[in-house]
Image 1 (tube, helix red, strand yellow):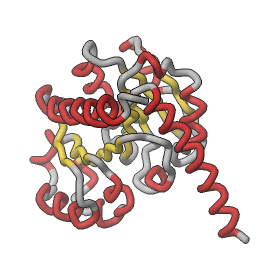
Image 2 (image 1 turned 60 degrees about the horizontal axis):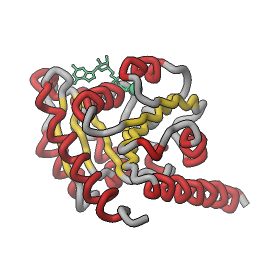
Image 3 (image 1 turned 135 degrees about the vertical axis):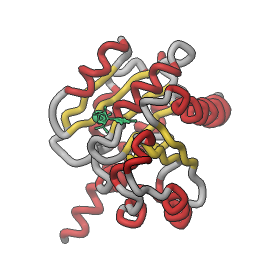
Length: 223
Ligand SMILES: Nc1nc2c(ncn2[C@@H]2O[C@H](COP(=O)(O)OP(=O)(O)O)[C@@H](O)[C@H]2O)c(=O)[nH]1
Ligand SMILES: [Mg+2]
């Protein structure tokens, strides 16, 4: 009986995820699910992306947090549409994201960055209807995390090694990490990012722009 209940919950989530995905496609929006541990630098990366992608692209953000509005307040200075979801839960689900979409002007956006709740486990288990997954992983977390959280790393379209300025202070083997992820995931990009290096955001922004052109403009252009 318990198993049946769980299956129904996931089925309902998947149905709503498909509705969200269709909405993103219809409005030609690249929805990017940004996942990683608490404090790994998700909001910092979103801020850096906003700085380089505006004014060429129109950006909205959905902030998912267990509690509070700290991140949405942080982003208010960019004067872009931001919705904060107070989840009281360890992950975003498709229904939460669906409720945020009612408050975003999707037709007038190119990217929606969805900052998931800081957690390397549960967000990987719930489809929210995104079109691209970025997994952030900061140097101080240690180079063994893909082995401990394989589902999260197996799903990533790109892994961003954040806080790369801290590499001199930690024994972090980038080659080992790349090889661990490659055993789980046949197709992923890997980037290094530091908020202290302005140029390090550029390859990530280029990757997102090329996915926007390839996925949203080419594949869904006729919807
Ligand atoms: N040294 C260093 N600190 C960073 C970097 N990115 C973020 N941080 C710091 O890490 C902390 C958490 O960052 P935040 O973006 O709020 O993480 P989030 O919880 O994943 O959204 C903050 O104190 C940031 O200033 C980085 O590239 N280098
Ligand atoms: Mg944050």
